[in-house]
Length: 272
Image 1: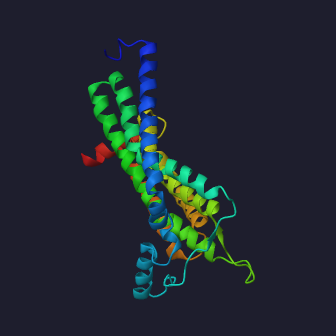
Image 2: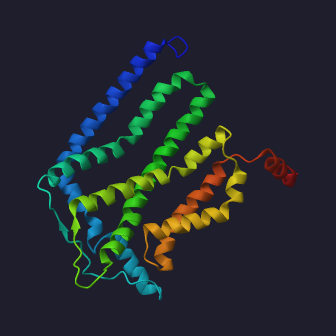
């Protein structure tokens, strides 16, 4: 039965089974995540809380070879974490297992969405959409990786090291650490979807290449402000570590967006 022959109730039934399969996959991965969470928490989630995290080690070696860079060679850096809620460890165990499972099954969710909508598409549309789903998945995971390996550690190190007064001893609660960890990692995953969103808006005629080129200077200023908010350290090196990936996304989005008709004519004239 193809998409044209399916009734509304047939589509609803297909949607119901699609959601059922997604929920089952989420449940299976969440159970698996719950089992391995003690190891995952100690070796992955809490890794940026100690001085031997790979980013700090790399920045330490870099600061020794390039004069003028901030000193990241503080071997005593570690996060003092406390828990003030009796039920927090158990519920954090559950919720973190759910969020990790949700991130891991994103490719499967996109596959189920693809399988649901593909019968209504033409062959050339199927080919394009398949690449769109693949590209979106890769960019999301790349953004999560950048959020985990760069954005969250730099933010954590600055905020934890910042002191309002010498008589205040900084400690971090479990809830505060996990909230910032999940939010920054997940937000960076969404931020890295900017090229895909730009391409989709371009395909339906909302966004043109001239928009990016016209407002490039405004975008640079906004991205600098965003980078400064994420890592408010004040030194140019740390700021550039966050700004460069964000600006690279902006320039990459330009490559995927359609040009205006006038721009296309100018490009063809230049080639001739």
